Image (cartoon, rainbow, N blue to C red; front, side, top):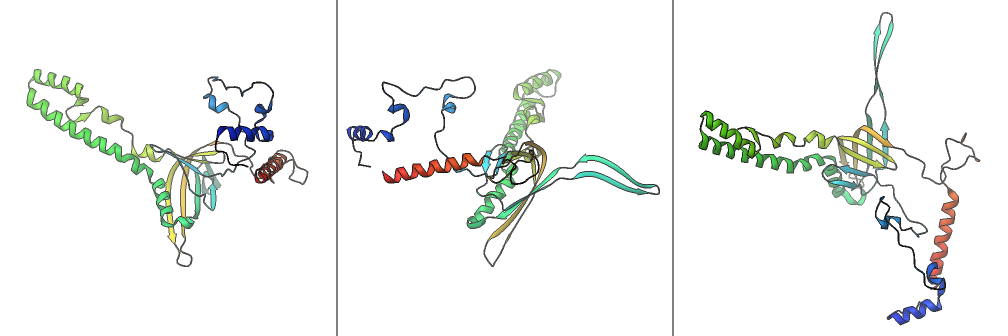
Length: 290
């Protein structure tokens, strides 16, 4: 490809190499791609087609942390275990066992892995995700402290101006209402403050189609002297699960089309992957020749 240092050089190159132009520019006459219109379901840019032949995508675990938003784990754990259990009480009596069924217990998810080259700084990231409700509540605590200080100051001002007479109490009540108080020691605004528990119990984990909402229960990590790697384990208890997970490996076969034998249709379209890989290789070879 020649050096392009001016618009004329670029135009000459496009004229001599029509194959490098988009298909809509190779058509005769004046033409341009259609401008996507807004249909009330997203901005126009979301309707622009993606002309890439393929892309690299990693199924990284993402966490939704209240007051902070979506946070991606820099590396997936080496193992994820899901523990589902039913609450059944067994009591032995003279006539046999008495069983009481209480439904399903909360799902327990254990994530274990190694921070790798990130070392202790990787642990810092995981630890801050683990106790994010403490950081989120700092601003709430500061607001409560400022509100309490203002409440005490307002109460003292009302008592100094009105005293304890009936008229003074009526005037004090009006002033307290304007200041956001229902009594000299209680603030109306402080009753609607978000709690520490609500911040801790509304964490969500997104992974490959599944969404788990719950809370972190435990985190452990340890250092090893033989390879200087740091292992970690995080226990997450889920109170709710949403979404649906499907196969994403090219060799996976459909579980709803009979037994898994060699002629069972794949749930992941391998032909499209092969065509995509061929297109990417051809485009790479064309670019290398130029």
